[in-house]
Amino acid sequence: MINSKVDDKNIGLLRNLFWLRQELDVYCLIAVNQDSINKKGVGKNFFVFLRRSCIDLITLNICKIYEYEKQYELNSIEGVLKHITSEQLSALDSSHIDDFIRKYDSSDKDESLSTLSSTVAGFKKKYQNELERFKIYRDKGVAHIEFGFNPNDLPPYDVMERLFNFGSEFYMLVSAAFVSTASVSVVPCDLNSDRKVKVGLKRVLHELGLTDIKTEME
Image (cartoon, rainbow, N blue to C red; front, side):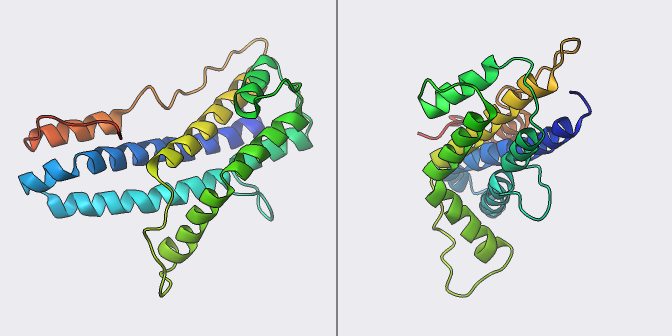
């Protein structure tokens, strides 16, 4: 249902996912090329600052995406799903739900809304410790600077990517299954296909004289 509440909330989720994708890309590109950047000596302090800033922004957006909806309505996975289940919205094409459940639940359960909810809950439980570490970092290292807090205690990059991918696929599921209609087909935004920020930063590094530029974490 285009321009419906679920569409609006899902677009809000998309915005957070979009910025998370850019932040992950910038962080990755700087991290894997840090030694080469340091050897060039041009803009070294700037890239250290940018890499650290990306960590703060990645943390904030992961927390936004996986925040539980309590007092206020949120454009989080939980917020979108809560609206879908409370309104008992019907899917135009339940195969998208089925595919998502099979991928993340590894079972032959049906594609009901309750099963979708349990699949999301199961994923969040699987990464409960990691999500809690992001929340602690947000509260003690970003929103406030608490004495004695260790800012280096964060999950590794591959966990960040897994959290992004789950959120991105959830957004695409909602777009295809609950926003599309019989008359209007919605093509979800593929956040992994158009990486202009990453491409732009790679060009900057090339202009600084880096030749063998790495683009992925090993």
